[in-house]
Amino acid sequence: MAVTKWIVDPEHSEVKFKIKHLVISSITGSFNNFEGGATSDLNNFESAEIHFSLDVSSIDTNVEMRDDHLKSSDFFDAAQFPHITFQSNYFHKVKGDNYKLSGLLTLKGITKPIELDAEYGGSERDAEGNLRVGFEVEGRLSRQEYGLNYMQLTDSGGLVIGEDVKLIASIQLVKQS
Image (cartoon, rainbow, N blue to C red):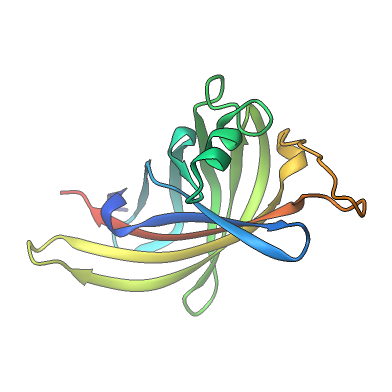
């Protein structure tokens, strides 16, 4: 089996998250610095190995004060836990261009299994002749399972921020020669 190595192109990829605020709307944020890659069969991503790392200090919600709070020990504790990492243990086709991506997510020093949905967007050569592939990845996690236990309440007794975090990533991989 011929092995192909791929790296994430951060200039053509994005990693975002959404979480409920005051239980009435969602806040969207992103991580602006990340790296990752994959190792696959030459012509197939079935059973590919996938790894990813996010720089917690690059969190961006378009509100500097909120970003600073998210980097603090109330949330991600970026000083002690500077990266969020993912290592796949299973990637398989479900139907058509849809895949299930399972692996271990480490956030704030806690490692837990997670399953994500991935949709293959296709492949294309860029202007320099490099082969690129794209994937849209989505999933959910419970923030408290990863030690993000900030529990401020509203006047009516609801949580200021929700429990579930939606993950959304648009990833472009470049084949390495």
